[in-house]
Amino acid sequence: MAEFDALRTGTVSGARAAEIDQGLRAHMNKVYGTMSVGMLITAAAAWAIAGLSVTSDPSGATAMLREGQYLTGLGNAIYATPLRWVIMFAPLAFLLFGWGALMRRGSAATVQFGFFAFAAAMGLSMSSIFLVFTGASIVQTFLITAIAFAALSLYGYTTKKDLSGMGTFLIMGVIGLLLAMVVNLFLQSGPMMMAISAIGVLIFAGLTAFYTQDIKNTYVAHAVHGDQEWLDKAASDGALSLYISFLNMFQFLLMFMGQQE
Image (cartoon, rainbow, N blue to C red):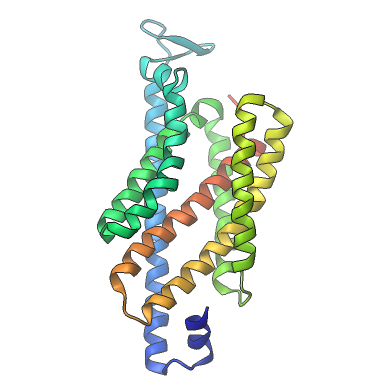
């Protein structure tokens, strides 16, 4: 926060402050652009996998999904075998054990590629929503999430309030949320899932504002030292943080608003 406060209060020279301010806008555009590409990759991967997993032709189908729809061999492998657990937890394992190492050791291009690969894996993991929910409800929920995300991110960017304390609390909430979700995988409790979804929306809404402010402050802290390589990697890191917040808000809202097939 110190470098950003210095920039705001003018203790950094005027020319340098203007340069940092211009660079910040470009950096945020890169963050949002990278995130948007990741979202497109996720959507395309999810839609394509879902399309390949279902058929209306019963010949050669492995299981019936619902009247007139059947799982293909690919669909059966993804959704009805132990492979589904690997697909479900692989993105989380990458975040916990792979992303930090990639940030430390990889080049900016490698980090960006890692993010896009993660987005594709998330698409595979989320493909089942196209089998469960109607296309109209998915689009409607996505648009509502996008509007809420834009408002929350704008707040995080413009507010003068320090959100770091709130961010620490919310990240602890994410850990509790993950534990509750793992427990509910075995309990299969509908009311508990609804409670998890409601809490999840609130947590990731707060994290959207927190991450936006953190991305902004991180840029200023490193820009005053001219650390361009780190800033390029930080753009992908920031895109990942906002991408995760958006995707989780979308999924939890879909639990409430989504109309099932």
